[in-house]
Structures are given as C-alpha cells and as structure tokens.
Amino acid sequence: MALTEQQLKHIKTWQACGSSQAAYCQTHGLNKKTFSRWFSNYQALSQAMAPSLIAIDVTQPITIPPEINEPLRLRLVNGLSLELPVNTSPRWLAELLQCLG
Image 1 (cartoon, helix red, strand yellow):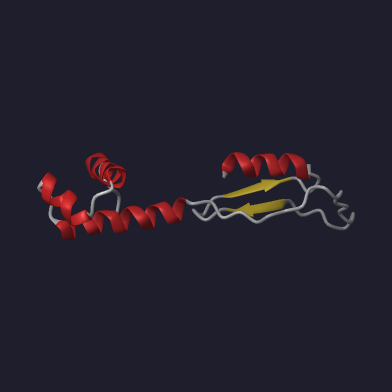
Image 2 (cartoon, rainbow, N blue to C red; image 1 turned 90 degrees about the vertical axis):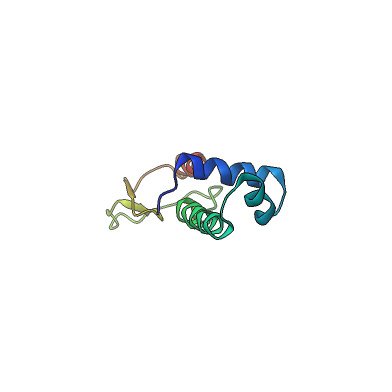
C-alpha cells in the first residue's frame, strides 16, 4: 500500500522526535493502530527498495573464457534487470554498484 506525503511526513517527524508511537499519536490526534499500520507499510516499502549487493573482488583481473558470450545480467530486488557486455570492466561495475547502493 502506498503512503501519502502526509503519512510519510508524520513517520519522519515521529522518527526524528524520539518519542513513543503512542505519545506521538496522542500529541498529533492520530489513531495509534492506524499509525502503526502506516509504519509497517513504510518498513515493508523500505526493505523492498533496499539494494542487495554482493561483494566482489576487483583487485584480480578476470579472464572470461571465449566460449562464454552471454551478457552479464544483474537482477534487482524490484524486478528490474540490467544487461552488460561480458567484457564489462570490473572496476566500472564496482563503481556502478556503489552509485546504485
């Protein structure tokens, strides 16, 4: 379930203030169960969007056997994929992954 800007604002404000959910909800006239559901949705969305990276060692040169001509495919958590040529520079790929992370 998508969150509205107002719901996100409440979540961010609550996280920054350091009070309990119950205290925040009481101060702002919010239903605690509703706010808790918003926060659960926020956490689920945050986890779904978090990148999952695998460490790779780019200090050693990679030699790809000539019989391998399939593109390098990166599949992201959100269902998107990226295809790169098999001879893509490992250093460039590491920089790309850092930028995406």
